[in-house]
Structure formats: structure tokens, C-alpha cells
Length: 492
Image (cartoon, rainbow, N blue to C red; front, side, top):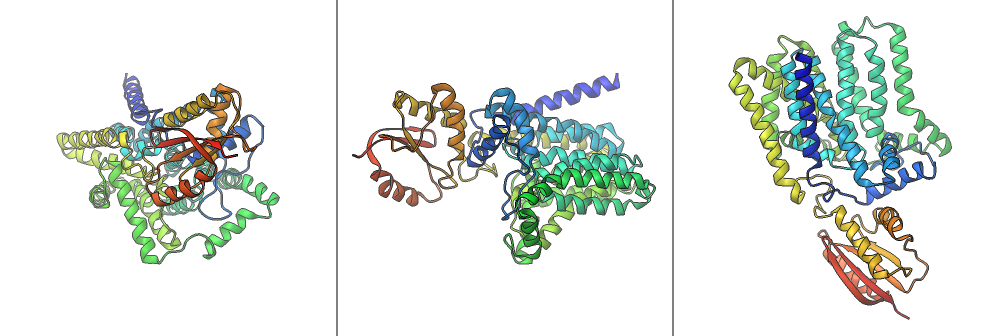
């Protein structure tokens, strides 16, 4: 009976998680240049059987993420014949299943089902995790993988030694999702193992060796093979980064301030609030209750290591902060909140239950309040009104105007003139429905897709007046959402 109750609760929370993450989809699916780049690679894997050893490029020259995202995306891509909406649904489903991992991890740490239910509830509704789940990219994979990694590590600390091998395997996938995770999770793992050395020192040598082999294989085999074929490009990039010759180096104070500020901002969004001050308040509250909880359960100190090691490392590295660098870390706040609310619940059922209800309602309110206009969505702040359905409508309008005649295409995008999204969408939606593609063979008909530029409207204006006007005479134009589509007849 108890197992049935648990299953019903977790299934219900998983459905809630999926519904919140799917809210306003597919119209609000963000399919930008990076998504187009990734889908072109996945198409090569599925259609042309052109396999890759690396993933997308990081912001450091010569350093790439791993290919795990591409090969996972290939599954729904193949089943749906390249439909971005189906691929998005697939990854949202993966994120939603994290409800169960959050429950297991909180239960493993506290040995209390109620703490597991609290963690699952916060995970399902968290505004920040909802936003991450709607990003069709590789970093969000860090969220479920971080929960799985910590679950394996906690079970290892509790003297189930073979879970060390499972943790090593997940570590490899974790790093492939976001390259910086290799460093972050390695340091976190070492701290945890040494902090609980009494529990881990009885592990047999065979397990240590097996875990080492598995971790190295899943982490670096593809990079090693890529490096052999490309003059050790990734190795040189990593060495340049560690030596300070690569990446963007900041002053230590600036780096530290940025690292902790971004962490606090994400802590606030985890409970449906915004601003680093709210994040600081939330963090102080959960850390105080964590300190009190560790008096009876010292294993809970793992959560402090999980949360606080990364910002210190980022400060030392003096790297500019990006929100997604914390993707595998901020989910630790879900478990921290669960431990904190569980501690309060034991003291006062009304206060504990009330705290959970308030957090869930705040998160749901933030989802409904922010997502219609993509407010506080970190991965598209400069282009919140970009809509997948508008992109498809623009393509349909172009083909309707072309009337089976060949045409050329140019698009104005953000980042500037990065054509990959339109290249993929014309291949998926245009060729599939109309049987031919635009080309650059001196056609008499040109269509120009112009995305509204709020960053530098003068640059766009000058481009239209000095460059586009020279291509031909305007025949027609239409505005579809964020896009203006202009039809030009080439000047003789």
C-alpha cells in the first residue's frame, strides 16, 4: 500500500513537472542559431551516418562539450523525422523524470520519505528548473545527471561500494553535457570522498580501479580520438585555459563577486523569486537549518560541499560567469530546501507544510507570470519574442509567394548573420512540404528575413538601407511576430 501511495504521488508530480515545462509549447519553443547548428549535426548523424566525437563548442577556443546531447537527440529526431517539437518533448520528459531522482536522493540522505516528497514537489514546480528544461541545448542535461551522480555517490558513502563505478560512469556523461563539469564534479567528488573517508576507505582496490577505468573511458575516449585526428586541438585549448592564455580572465574580486551573485540569483529563482538579495536570504535560511540537521545526520554536509565548492572554483579560475555553468549545481538547492523544510516540519507541521505550499505556489505563479513574455528567461534575454511557430509561418509565406519559382534567401539573425536555424528549418519544413530549397545561384527572386534587433537597431537600419536595397526592388513584405519578411526582385 505504501509503495502504491509513493508511486501515485511521484507520477502525479512528474505529470505536473511536464505540464509546467510544456506550458505554451510549441509556439514558445526557442529555435535560434545554436539550435539550428545542433540539429544540422544531428541530421548528419541520423540521415548521413556521419558520426561525431565531440559536441558543440564552448566559449573557449579549442574546447568542446561532449557528444552525448547529439546522440540522445538523435533518438527522437529519427523517430519524428527531424521535428524540433518532438525533440523538445523528449528532453522535457527526461527533465520531468528528475522528480523521481530528487525523491530518491532526498530519501537517501535523510532516510525519510517526507523529505523525498518535498524534494520531488520543489523539483517539479521550480521556476528555474522549468526554464532550464525549455532550453533545447546540452547544458540542461546536467540537471538530471547531477542528481544521478550525487545519488550514486551518497550510496557509495553509505558503504555500497559498487555505486562508485556507477558514479564514475555518470561523471563521464555529466562532463559531456557541460565541459566545466569535469572540473567541478571531480573536485566535489574528491572533497566528499575525503570528508567521509571512514566510510569509503573499506572499498576494495578492484572497485577503485574499475571506477577509474569507467570514468576515464566515458569522459575522455572520444576527446582522445578527436585529438589524435586534429593535432590535439582540445588538449591545447584546455592547457591554454588553465595557464591563463585562453578564455577571458577577470580580476579575482570581480570573478568572485560574479560567481556568488549568479549563484544567489539562481537560488532565488529556484523558489520563484528574483534578485540576488532574495537568493541570499533563502541561502542563509537553508544553510542554518542544514547546520542544525547535521547534528543528527552528518552525511548532509555533502550538500554544503555540492553548493559551495563551485563558486570558489569559479572565483579562482577568474572566468566570466554564465548562468548555465551552474546547471549541475543549483539543483542541489532542491535537496537543501527539502532538508530545511523537513527540519521545520518536525518542529511544526503547520509551518513546514505552509513553507512548502508557499514555495510551490510562488514557482507556479512565476511560470504563469513570466513565460508568456519570456521574462526572466536567461537564454533568450535579447530576443524574448522569437517564436518557432512564427518561423514556420514565415517559411510558408515565402513559398506561397515564390509559387514554385526558385529563389535565394538571406536572414538577419542574432547573433548576427548566423544562418543555421533557417538553414535547418527550410530543410525540415520547406523541403518536406514544397519539395525544393532556396539557393544562391543568382536567382531573380530574393527573400530577406529580418529579425527585430533591439540591441543595435541602427546597425540593422544601415544594413537594410545600404546593403539590402542594392539587391533589388521590393515587391512585397509582411510582418510575422518578431520577423519582417521582404520579397525582392533582383535589379537587372
